[in-house]
Image (cartoon, rainbow, N blue to C red; front, side, top):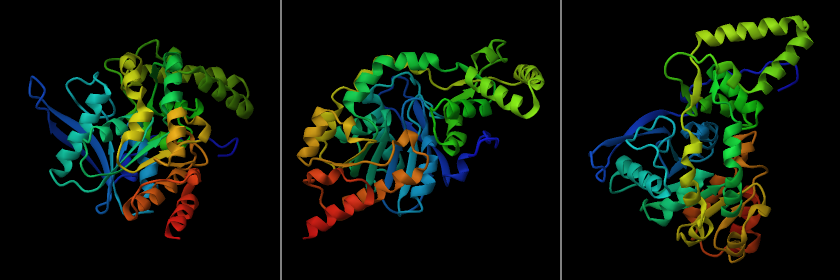
Length: 372
C-alpha cells in the first residue's frame, strides 16, 4: 500500500480461501429439550493430519482464511476451521454459555460428528481464547487421536492482566457500522486486524446486519477516525468544499442501508474470561501430547511456562511478529509445518533450552542434534 492509493475495503468470499463449507450437526444428549446444534466449519485438503483451528474471542473461523490458503500449499494436511459457539454462523440453543468446559466439549463433539470412532490424527491450533479452549480440550482428552497442541499468542499471566482493561477496550469500539465495507475499514485503521486481506474475508464473521430499520444514531456510532482520515484525503485531492458534500452523501446512504453490528456481545461474556485463562499454563504443561507455543517474544512467558521451557516440556517458537499483527500469513506458516513434521516423525520428549529458536531453522537444528 502506498500513500495516495485508495485501498479496497470490499468483502471477499470465503470460497477464495477454503474448498468447502459445512454445517456439522451435533446431537446434544445433555440438553433437556434434546436439541441438535449446528457448528459451521470451513475445510480444505483431503489427506494427511487434520489441523483443527480455533479462533479468538469475537472472531470466527474466517480469521484463519489467509493462513489456510498459505499452509495448504506447504504441507499435505486437512484444514478444519470451526466457528465456536456464540460466534460466526454456529447455531446452538444457549450461545451465551461460553465456559471453557462447554466449548471444549463442543470441539470434541464436532470431531466425533465428523470422523466417528476412528478420527485421523488431529493437531489442535488455537489463537488467544481459541488457544485456551484447545488446551482445555486436550487436557480433558476429548480428541482421542490428538497429534499435537499449539497455542498462539496466549499466556496465562499476560492474558489475566489484559482482562482488567478488556471492558474499556470493548466500550471503545463502534456499536454499529453503516456497511460491511465500513466495518472492514474500521478493523484495519483501528489496528484490530493489521492484514487488509484477512479483514476483507473475516469481518463478515464478526458482524451481522442489524434487525429492523437502520438506526438514526448509526452515523454517530461510526468511529470518527475513519471520517477524519477521509476528510483529509478529500481536502488534499479536491479542496475542503467536497468534505461537507461527502458527509451529506454518507448520511443519506446510511438511511438507505442496513446497519451492521457485532455478532456477539463480548462484554456480556465477562464471567467466563477467568475460566478460560486461570491455571492455563500448568494445564498446558500437564497435557501429555506434544506441545508448541508460538509467541511474539520470550518476554511474554510467565513463571510456570519459563520453568517448563527450561525443563524442556514443550517447544517454543518465536515468529517475527504475533499472529494477530502478522502482515503475511506465511510467517506463521513457516512455524507450524516444521513442528508438525517433528510431531509425526520423532518422539516428543525433552527439548533443550535453545528450542526457543525461531522457525524452521530452529527445528532443523534440534533434529540434527538428536541424530548425532
